Length: 406
Image (cartoon, rainbow, N blue to C red; front, side, top):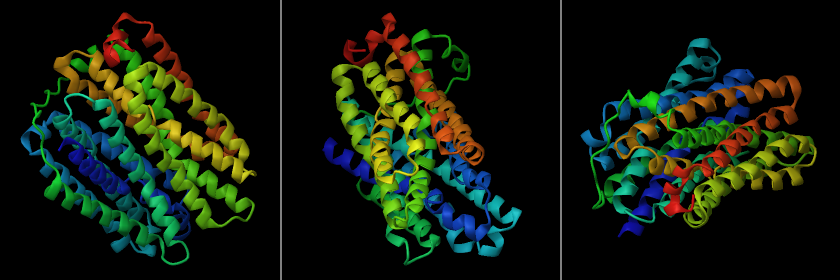
């Protein structure tokens, strides 16, 4: 039964998370139709990140997962997210999108979409935990893999729609996916036998969490990971599109490459989830960060070699998210058990806030200094993360992770 529920939750996450990059996948069309600047384009993704932070914090502070049945909360949030996202293609005309007020409305709707997604992904994790008292490493890897595949889905829809439909159909299909996820959650998702009360959010623990050396190192490792992850997901497909265009390869091929670059991370999540319980969390994260950071340094220099760039981006996409679930799992193992909920909320909010800086910085640096400098910037995150995970591994508290395998 628990494996059936894991499949259900993975499908629900995959479909709902199509909302995340549904606007980012069609920025080339939006740029032309609405006359957007690179900063405007960055805000189409940044707004979702900020909304997710607001939603995650509000959910924790008001303890929504205890007040509302998790399956209902997940379904309602997925449905509302679909509605907010759908307003953009249905009601934002070309003329309205070109105005400051119209674009501000788009950003507000994208932010509200992010708020709703904060009720989908964390709630799905909570439901998974009610079924898996043990073996959560693989289960978490599957759910993060589903999130990754969902985040890549708009690129696949875009590739299919090129030459047949305009950008609106991409956002409409993504919204339909999220609506379907709400139906599946209501009809098939169930709460497992290990449901417990959510830990109360404690503002006082906000300061103390940074005073514990092991927890602080794990959080810094996560921040290094997040510094790179969402900016890579947002801009690597754009780099591929520019590279394919430069040698007159098809736009559809570029879109498929962009999809594959993100989607392959789903496989990375599942494999890393299985490996981490065997070889340790710090080793898993360190290896992932080394590989992804190296790819960040290389990718921008391959603009005129699309085949080689595609290979590097696939390796990058596999490694950049493979370690994601391990940072959250490490925090749950290292922190005071009374404050696990607060610790995870703080980690998530800090990480997603950080992503807004790099999502904004990449197009700005690219415009002034080119793709090599813009993508190499992202390698700073892995360097920072590796340092702190190596230090974490040397601490006595590290034996609390992965059954003593650090």
